[in-house]
Image 1 (tube, rainbow, N blue to C red):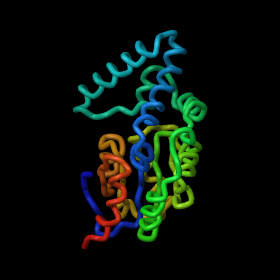
Image 2 (image 1 turned 90 degrees about the vertical axis):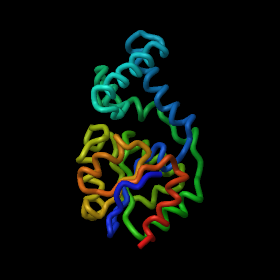
Image 3 (image 1 turned 135 degrees about the vertical axis):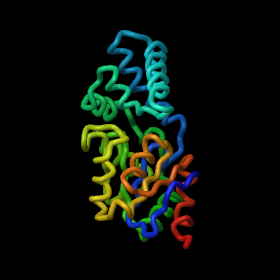
Image 4 (image 1 turned 120 degrees about the horizontal axis):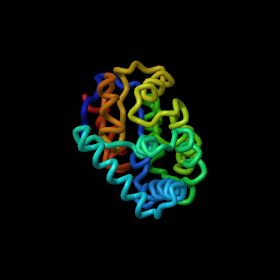
Length: 216
């Protein structure tokens, strides 16, 4: 976990979802595999060939942009797949119910956090996948806002997504904290917008956030 900025007053917590509200490496990789496999089929390539091209493109992009990470959604756009198609593919191919289970500890943590601040999710998955994921984890009812890939048809980092979450929470941007597992995707832009930021290594770190917010 790394703290970048915690406002004196926190009234909104804006979470990334995948890799943040749950830690499941097999499921995380599954999401990449099914999308790259679909693109490979479209291009008449093997999965391995398609994965190599995507990995090489992302490596070159990172070198040209100071080591920043490029989301898979934006990478797909570079390969000619519009966001609308990525939304359709994700809704069809990704099944959180097959991998995740109810998480009572996460619910207890988020319930405690919700007593201090409004909760939102900003994700690069479509909102229907987000709702199914949060429902499977047993925490859907605790979130006041879900902003997904289909909300603005734009992949994070995207300023409107974070600003919409703050607006839904009726929280000043300066009183919001973005929480996620990828600095370039989840944290850097919110910091530029004037939000706080907490980089986590997985859901295990989320359980420590209440203690951080309680510190004077």
